[in-house]
Length: 184
Image (cartoon, rainbow, N blue to C red; front, side, top):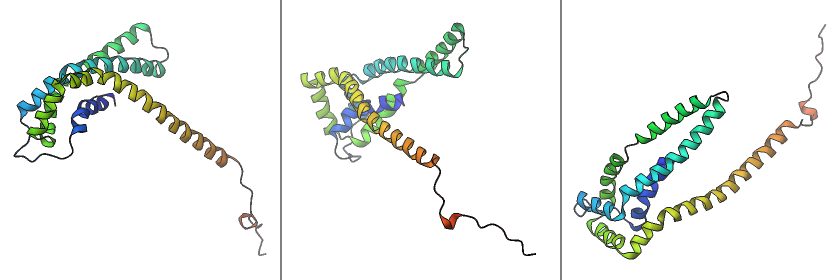
């Protein structure tokens, strides 16, 4: 899930500025997209984001392992944490970003990318990119609060529904069985 959030965040600045797909004749070139990535410092941000994701995943993994194996020793937990760390380090961020280039080309024209390069090269664009991690973190925290209210409401309603199901229902005359009669 965290990787999908990372990919969403990487695409967000470009997606926010695009309203239509570009035709193949005026599609952005690979070189333009690479320059845009450079100006936006996408590769550096992606690696920093992965470091953050790694820390979060490590904590979640540790918690899950402890719940699944309550008798785990400190040495076994350290070994499991190393496995998790090694696994996360193998996420091919550069390859993922390279694979995103054709997606950007599909949706952005040369003019779109040129305008974005100008914007992200400007002081305002640089400030936006500098502040984007904090903005995203705060926005996600705020969104979680709203989602948590919805989740709490759903759980409350499910609890109420389950309690209603547990209570015996009054029997109606049509649902009462008649005693069997013996034809003999």
